Length: 266
Image (cartoon, rainbow, N blue to C red; front, top):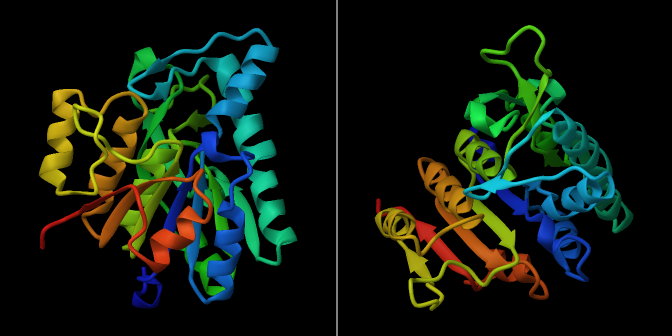
């Protein structure tokens, strides 16, 4: 990606922080009006769970990632690429921002393969085509990305053409691909904690890896930390913060913020 896009901030909005009276959308619009370039990746696990429950479809998770059969894939696609994505885009535009919603399928943005046969149609990122992001950013828009993605690699003939990919690794891959200035995860936790439950302000990649190995980092926090480590190949800093705090994103961008920062020693 061209050097004039090296100041992009990639923001991952966790599903648990959506529609909870937060100020995330306000912060996104304010930062755009201040000339910041942002890429937003969102989840929607809470909304997906609600719809699966309504439809009587059971669901389970392995290390924070959803096992996705065909019925679940249909719900995930409808909720993430449809309802949740358009609600975020509408909220940004109604507050005076400029956003365009898309999924990983659009423009072959996110191309994936099956992560593990036992995980069903849950995928992993195999390739990114970021030209569409460049066009939108240079045109003054915030790309708002649903991680529903294209099943491009090793796909059996009768298999679905879409994969469910966790938004956390998608955000990390995008941040790494564009050399983002920051990657910020807005979650429903205070940050990364040690084995005694004490929040940790700063970590090196080695320290973050050790917390996964020890089990202090577990469940849905694992893909977030691994995404941060992936992004640090080209991204200056990565942050996991509590998106439920008022103006948490703005504080993180303009000051030191709260939560946990993982940064490489260069």
